[in-house]
Amino acid sequence: MALRNRTALTNIVNQENTKNFKSSVTTIPGKTKRAALGEIGNKVNTLRGIEPIDRTSLLIKDKKPIIAPKQAIKPPEKATEKLPVQIVKPVIKVAVSQESVVSVPAKKEVQSFSSDLLAVEDIDEEDKGNPSLVSIYSNDIYEYLRTLESMYPISKGYLYGQEVSPKMRSVLIDWLVDVHQQFHLMQETLYLTVAIIDRFLQAFRSINRKRLQLVGVTAMFIASKYEEMYSPDINDFVYITDNAYSKVEILQMEMLIVKTLDYSFGRPLPLHFLRRYSKAGKALPIHHTMAKYFLEQSLVHYEMCHYPPSLIAAAAIYLAFLIIDNDDEDQQKVVWTNTLAHYSTYSKDDVFPVVRETASIIVNADKIKYQAVRKKYAQAKCMKISTRPELRSATIDLLATADKSAV
Image (cartoon, rainbow, N blue to C red; front, side):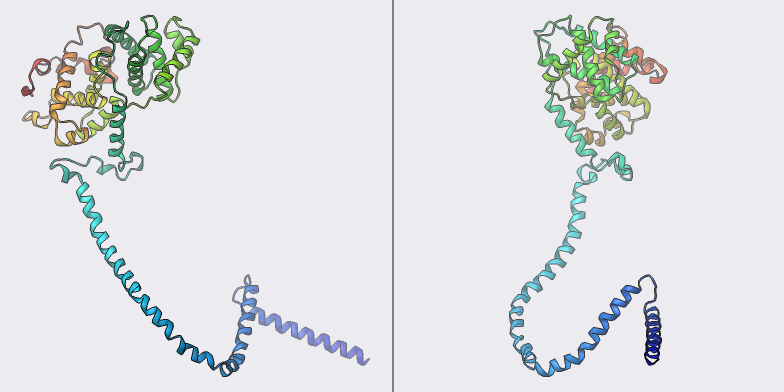
């Protein structure tokens, strides 16, 4: 019986201890989810709270460490040797931080457009909030395009000594303008097609007249792959030639053109520069469309192919601004502004000879055999640009024959 009572008493005591332990655990942590962490932290703190009893004994025993700080006075003497370094660092930081804040705007002011030229506007200022226009890199991009056009030049009179004549080239491109419309291709595809033809005929000088149309069709086949999202099938190009060439012949010519041009088709197009110049000159849609008409007319004519794309685009927008009256008074003063000269990198004297050649082409556009471009721009979607009276005015007639001092 005594043993039974002892076991009962011990059970009761154990139950009370467990109750007290549970209550202490629940009251200490504020949140039930982190009770375990709270208990661990309390146990560690309680153990550390007991340590000061031993620390007092340690302080009494270890009186030598108290002398150690007196010996530690010498290391600070070494530290004092490093103090000049520590003093210099904060001074440099303050000086650099203040000078950098002042110097950075100074550089920006030097690179600003208003400091380079007095009347040059920053045409990309309004586009800084649009990340898709990448206005920060636009000037660098066009500088790179100018280096590319210098890397892939087309020499003047490159057809000299070949079986292919300038008239044959004009007939081919005039026909490709119609093909381009039938396939409903992008504008860049037509310009790239002509660039591929000129570069290939300049490098590969053994093309005869029977294979010239094959070169033109294959050049458009390559350009459509480069520019179009959904390029026409090769069977469409076989059909457009009235089965004059087979599918195998087009593929063989494609390999020949690609190897001859070293797989490089990144030569910039006049249309790329025209869009930039239209923005710099604040061109209206009628100005931009008329400039595109001038560009496509210059594609057909052999005497214009040796000019750089950036220069042809500058002459096209110059002529469009000149013959379409924006202001009745002093219109000649605002044709080629400082902003246009800045972004095009061409002065008025550089552009004017090309303007005269373009004007002579437009004056005779009704009389020549190549009418594909003129018919194209006589449609309503092209604002009927080729039928406007400005193209038959006395101003453009004078441009074709006038001296530099006339404009």
